[in-house]
Image 1 (cartoon, one colour):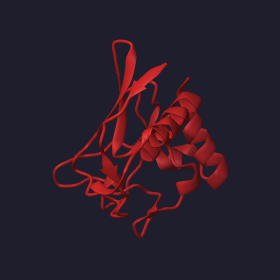
Image 2 (cartoon, helix red, strand yellow):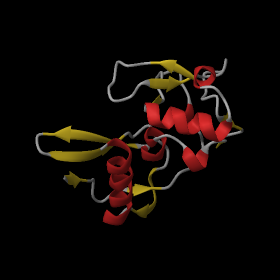
Image 3 (spheres, one colour):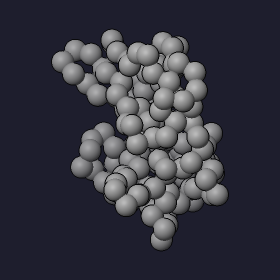
Length: 139
């Protein structure tokens, strides 16, 4: 499988947690696969129904993570992810996403993330790691 990625692109996570919840401009759906829900449930000892809502509008995802009253991911604690080591694929990718066009996967990104344009220029190995995560999880 082939993939393309943006060049040159700088990115450094600012630890702002913007990606972990809704803003006035955007409602986020933190989509997860059934296998990811199972893994989170096993590792946290929390029943899947307590942290997810069914959401099959965007296959292959089966669920979305519930949010708190302040519209943030229920696993967010003081701008830090409490399940960071086993966070869902969609979270590992942000601010990037992977689209499929014709016969190639294409990495795109959102400019809403304040970390875009900061830090070091990302090289092929960064995107290869993301793509390997994708192929291991999805295929």
